[in-house]
Amino acid sequence: MFSNVSIILPAKNESGSLVQLLPELKRHAAGAEIIIVDDGSTDDTVALCRANGVTVISHPYSMGNGAAIKTGARAARGEILVFMDADGQHRPEDILRLLEKLAQGYDMAVGARGRESQAGAHRAIANGFYNRLASWVTGQKIADLTSGFRAVKAGKFRQFLYLLPNGFSYPTTITMSFFRAGYAVAYVPIHAPKRIGASHMRLARDGVRFLLIIFKIGTLYSPLKLFFPVSMAFLATGLGYSAYTLLALHRFTNMSALLFITAILVFLIGLISEQITLLIYKDGG
Image 1: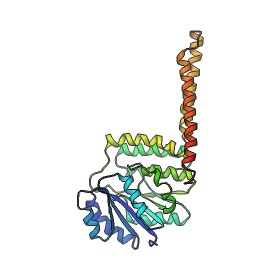
Image 2: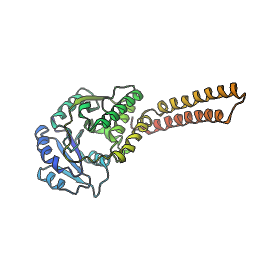
Image 3: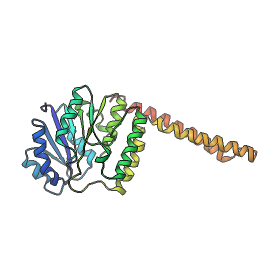
Image 4: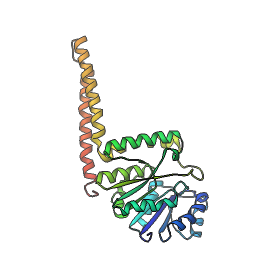
């Protein structure tokens, strides 16, 4: 079952969780290739992994979660790649459930966390918003856009390596890329225990990155779906304002002209972005 599976875990100072996770992983996924990508750890993560007999690839310095994912994907020998966090939030016994979805014909299976598994109310609200926005853009039900626990067919995943960022938003990018390419994605409900150790996420620093996810959702799938409503909003405002000024002041103002021009420019930017998106996915899709 696991002979053609490579399990990839990015890790940065995760020895506290790996000491429990690795034995469990070897027990539940016997025969799988296990790759730990050490992203510049300063603790005994590397020594612990070697003591457990798993493959370790070390970055010379911290390059980011997404960079570790790409390193692991390039090195993996399996036809199926399983990505999971090294902090204990993903349970090895759930891997089989993801693989069952691939056996049913899906190209990627994602572990979808429930609201009770979110790390705080602010994270739950943000992820809920991303899920709804991405579902609207793609026209498909997306249960967990930012989950890092997923199984995927290696060949199709590697088609999009050049698109993946080096930071924490790689799940968003690969999810939207798969939908854009017409690949089948399944969601499997999971329970994510509380992480072991301190999180590497920082609200002030990563909050801005997560706001950018909102724009990335649209630009990776269909930019015009985001730009067109904005253009229509400017157009409607321009029509309303010009009607008011014509009736009240009996003249067409510069502000009215600016609103109309902005509506046209936003629409054209969306149209150009749509064509660029088609070029990006020409070879991958």
